[in-house]
Image 1 (tube, rainbow, N blue to C red):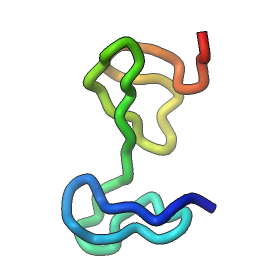
Image 2: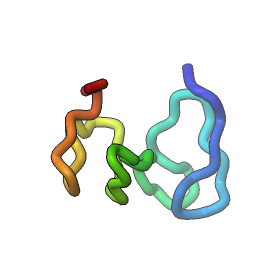
Image 3: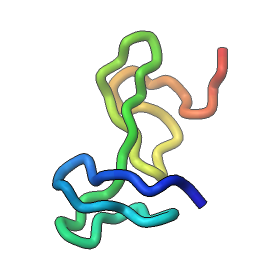
Amino acid sequence: MGEPRLCWCCDEWLGFGEDVCPRCGSVDRVPCGWGGCNGYLEPDDESCGWCGQDRFDDD
């Protein structure tokens, strides 16, 4: 279970563990942020589409 958070696309709150916004239908995403990357990761992404960094790579 995750924390409740605002949808990135509208002002609807996503509940615990929700990946799709009930208002606008957008899939939740988080910023990559690796090395200053401006890309975003959706819940089922294993790597960033912008920089190619693996989601779970801590190096």
